[in-house]
Image (cartoon, rainbow, N blue to C red; front, side, top):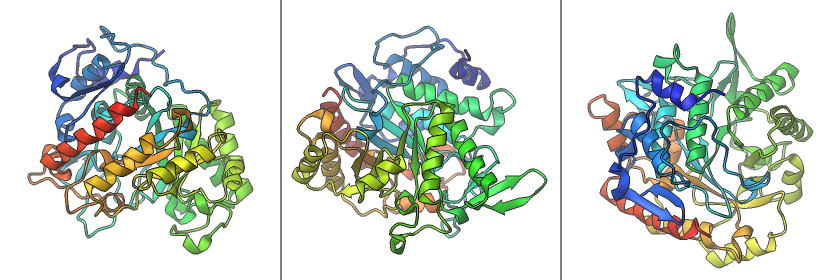
Length: 438
């Protein structure tokens, strides 16, 4: 079996010998056997090299074993086939934390690896799952950052074109493939006790199909070849170790509630999407898959029968007692349950730290028994506050560099809040420290 983490280290000209350096101890949070780094700003980790972070992830793994080399076999955290029904989904905008060199953007998967030690691992009773915002190339400006005045949306993707230049480390592709880089990320997330997934879009006019000897064509759900391509692309990613897909605009599949549809273009028919989700499960032979539908929460049977595991934004988490009441009402629904949002990808900012902490508190503790917990969706900003003049949605729609000297280090330091962000992150870690041993 390939050891993709060791292959990545060799590709980066790093040693594969693990060093259990203790630099991280001043940031260490623990909850029983669970360990992670808190009270940080992301630049604390993003400015390190990948080898340092691999060493740290091995050193703080739950078994307390500091292996001489990264293990050849790392299994996904085992919470059974229905883990997604009660998980916390934490979306990381891997494009926003990618390396910005001048006007170029790259290596988002390496940045995603670097941030892993600061994501609290899964609890005893439920999983934490990282959702990566970008995997596929975006239609316009992939591989580049642009001024805030120019749209560079993650919501427009290209299929049949591999993986985004924003995300993959293209400089080492002759040594390690894009697929192997993604596998290495998944192995490192798994040793840290995390599930992983990615965001996808289903609005036809937000998808292009690439051709090797012709111009890109518009995606069409009525074209059987396009439907098959969509299935194949997603199965391929599942086979690399991802176990969850967040489906943008899933509420409106089959023409439901189109008055509130904000996407662009036709959506798959209801039966068609049932077939697609079935095929992804069947072809990948992955029985643990979790499909999360954006705002797919109002008609429980509609979304359960569609094949979804959960939907977002059913209950506002500001009211602890309201959340607890619903967790009790839905305690016997183990195939599908609607979920909460601390915040979502359309968040334009303005929510205070106290409000966010209160929403996280409800998400982590508002139940009678931990097994009754409702699924929750969070954004990167809910763990690592952004600078005052940007927000989650802006970073989904545009890809600015905040560097003052055209270096990635400057971008990372300026993208996030500083001292107050560090203090907030410590408070988030304190909440998780009470929850993870339940």
